[in-house]
Image (cartoon, rainbow, N blue to C red; front, side):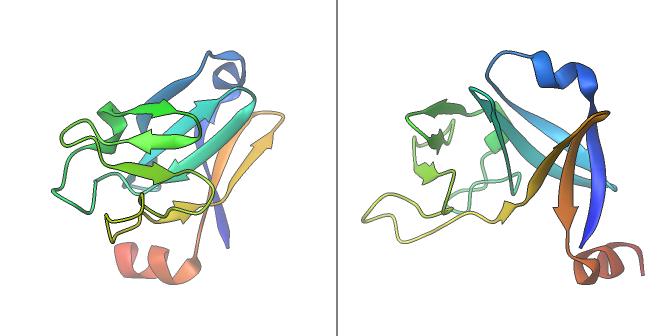
Length: 111
């Protein structure tokens, strides 16, 4: 696992948010709820909407287009949706927020 810094330490004090971040040249979606951070794939598997423009409610990321909901702990969509989102591990460090990317993903992106 390669850990990539996506935000500096100032993000640790931010209020709740849903936004895009760059992780080694790959766009991801980062969510802060309370004191917890989550990282997901950037686009909704249903219709390709940009999840970074979505909202979060009761532990679920809500797609901005069709209101599909995804559990931030499991990635699973609501019952009946039949889909899920990829989740990435996150780590809070003294100097900021890091996201873990598998080495195979980095090799595929950068050769």
